[in-house]
Length: 170
Image 1: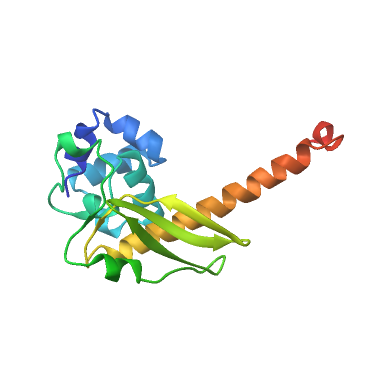
Image 2: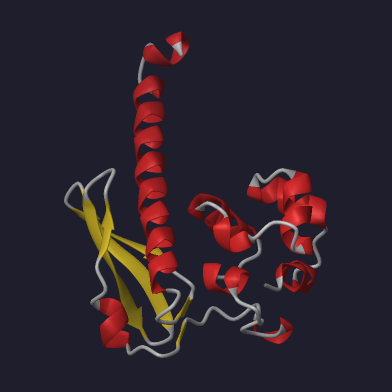
């Protein structure tokens, strides 16, 4: 695990990473120093950490850095040990909302694709796909689907509240 190196590539302090990812500062220090095993952390925490550090969950859990500082700015999805066909046909099922999704590639760009209320939703999905990481990446995809739906529901409530006199009651 190279949590410290990933953090340093982004010129961030431990406190910044902890605050931005919603993790207790002391817990973050324990993960970075190896006192706690990051592989045993909850999926949502790994997802938030990966967003904060702009890396894949696989990067957080691996014992090596997949890319160097010069590649951090590139938006490239890499596939190792798998074919694009295998990744695109891997089933993603979000159980809370009972939604099926999949990954779709267009060149080096990957998107998470799913249907929500009759609308085809495409969300950018930046990751390094390996056989070992596929399960973790599917959890990250499920969390992205949940987040999208929750944001949509929140926006709908706000729109309803802002209509007419309802806005004053809010």
